[in-house]
Length: 527
Figure: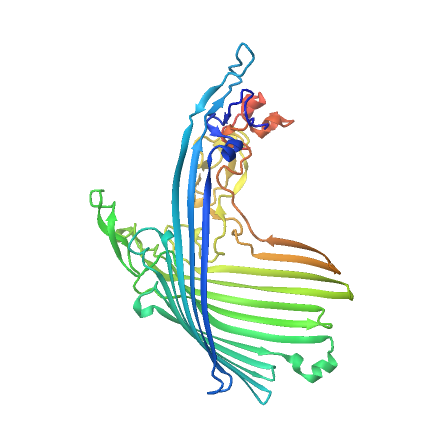
């Protein structure tokens, strides 16, 4: 209401903004129509299980068929009312009523509709084996196969978008445990994806895990009775990634291009196929500990991990322009990076009496990473390289302060990011010392927008049927860059300037029309 009235005193709807041609929130909510969105989901599951103990004790099979269908239908009824503007500089009519001018013309109600749907088939077959010998040797095994197909009308038109997305995989697992104290597990996956050529369509991904539970020893129970459970575990293996930016990247696609000999339309390669492309592979190492202490009051789990990813799919940026492929650079498995860290959680439970107890929990995660190799072109200085620094690290210019006066501007490196540099503008550092601040001075500044450390604390108190709980979460080592005008307090002047009401206007870089002091004029300033 302070910015724009709901209605003028004469009952007309107001327009506002710099040009008085925008709709107020009240108008947008009540006079622009409505949407009617209908969504539906249908899930069908058929599962069959059969115990084959008559053939081999502990043997069983199962099969699963699943069909999931989703859809959405949207009807959009849109309209726009007449909007008027009462210019305070014009004044009022002789009778005191507002003098208004129509700035936005009414649009009658129009209706449109859209529909989208997707359908997913999933078929699974599995053979299970679970048997204990002499109450000491536990043996399990599993053979698993699945196939999945997805169709989605939201993928749009085109020869590739109408083709269903398909995956197929086979896997096996075998485990052995001796007295539930010594454990070993091995897995192998044979996974196929449509995104790879026939010769490399399937990838093999093995893994192995070991476990040791010393709390099963009698001497541990006698000498360290406060340890209720203690387990050390470790695993090592590989996983694959096939979710790339495009489908069928191994195919070379020919179509219309705007890069003919004379600059006009022509037929050319819109995608250079990566025929030798393979699965992006991550090798994982994990070491962990699980323990319960003091009559299970304390429960602690901690994991340490280290991952190495190779064959990251990226453009061949190093190919020279003379090759003629500057607009359609091929992709290849050339990038690599590593990550490491730890995560865990701990909880403490205390029972006060039969009706009262409380629990305190905490979790923590530390995740670091570094790019081992990332192919780039145009790297003139080491700090411009993505190799050797964390993935997604924020980059930009280094601010050294504000220009104090015209002499300061003339004696500083030339700033290429502003046509007319004025006192009060930000002064950026000339990193490479060439006397010009440009793209060659952009450096890694801080962290990425993915937190490297996360933590949380929770408290729960129970008394009979009464419960109270609280949660605190936090992140560290993370940075965000807010772009656009959304974070400027009064961008564009459409709602005034916050600095026009400060006490010491003469010391602020604001338009002279607000401060009354021409020395404060700086059209480049946003605050």
